[in-house]
View 1 (tube, helix red, strand yellow):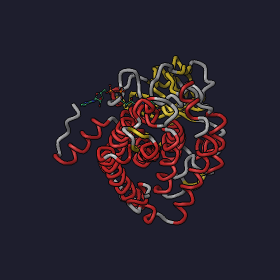
View 2 (cartoon, protein in one colour; view 1 turned 120 degrees about the horizontal axis):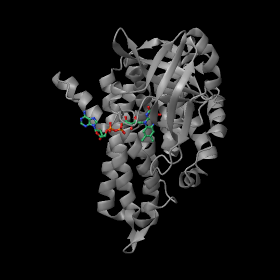
View 3 (cartoon, helix red, strand yellow; view 1 turned 135 degrees about the horizontal axis):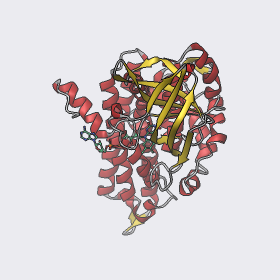
Amino acid sequence: MLTVAELFSTDALLTAEEREIRDTVAAFTERRVRPHIAEWFEAGVFPVREIAPELGKMGVLGMHLDGYGCPGLPATAYGLACAELEAADSGLRSLVSVQGSLAMTAIHSFGSEEQKQQWLPDMAAGQTLGCFGLTEPDFGSNPGGMRTRARRDGDDWVLNGSKMWITNGSVADIAVVWAQVEVDGRNRVRGFLVPAETPGFTAREMKGKLSLRASITAELDLDEVRLPADAVLPGAAGLAAPLSCLGEARFGIIFGALGAARDCLTATIEYSRTREVFDKPLAAYQLTQAKLADMALEWGKGQLLALHLGRLKDRGALTSEQVSAGKLNSSREALAIARECRTILGANGITLDYPVLRHANNLESVLTYEGTAEVHQLVLGKALTDTAAFR
Ligand code: FAD
């Protein structure tokens, strides 16, 4: 009997170091996350303060960044780590994406030397948590329309506005907040580092989610938040700055979503071999095998694409359109796989005794955040036709 990875010999495409990193992360999730994840998901909690330092010790927070306590590992290794994290739960991978690819990348790419020294080593260690505040209640796919504003008052900056759907927003020590600044009569998006204890900054956890329940999501409110002159990220001028951070997080999702899909397939194949219907195992029916074959094929194609994109990124040759293609494919196909697996599990599939509906529910968010499937279709459409159809 072959695993899906064996079917496509995808391991043969990895270096010994990449396999070791993958196995280390997989062993961590096996020991530390998998035994509790159904309970956390049901309760709508995630012990981020306990888990983050352990992730830090393992070197996965800011894994692809250089210096300041970060290991500076290749992109493909980071992707493989994301796959193992997301095979446990998309909430765990989201924590790592937001900390490393969004908050830390913003500081690493656009921060001053002092900002990098002050924040990055503790963030890499998981002792300091960051969040990334871009989305607003009325501006998700179109963040350029954001209403949060920063104005100068003497040397200080004063921020007003609100952000929504911010992962780890209510547990973060430092929020990277994107705001419009008026420069010569025109708005320009700039990034600010807002320590959580700053007067006027409040974060409220959002409840009632049916997806990513083992992940903290918050609304941020900024009411006359006064920051010193050096709170601005000096290198970030314009929307391209936060979008470049999103590109890093999307890259992790290309691998991550396929980790969730693989976990669904593993559980479902095992189930189909033991569950008997009409006097023989489900796995012995052609309809079941057709479903499994098609799902394995989608997983294999997605994994080969992910590895190809990883190698391009390692060579510095990956384009943003290729990231869109990978994110669109992985999140869409992983969700389709999770839903199809659920059918094979029948009624058992709707419970937390099996991971498939938990993954499917999580993947609904993965399909939507970091650019919705539709937005990535529009990115590809623009690349193919040289015509933007966003508006
Ligand atoms: P909308 O922009 O309102 O889109 C609604 C629908 O319209 C979608 O189907 C979309 O594809 C479609 N649509 C939009 N524009 C077009 C168009 N031009 N043509 C055709 N269709 C279009 N944001 C952060 O800043 N930081 C975070 O940490 C963060 N974490 C998140 C965690 C979770 C669990 C979730 C669910 C979201 C998170 N987000 C975060 C927000 C996320 O990035 C947004 O939800 C996403 O960008 C989509 O925005 P929206 O929800 O406002 O949808």
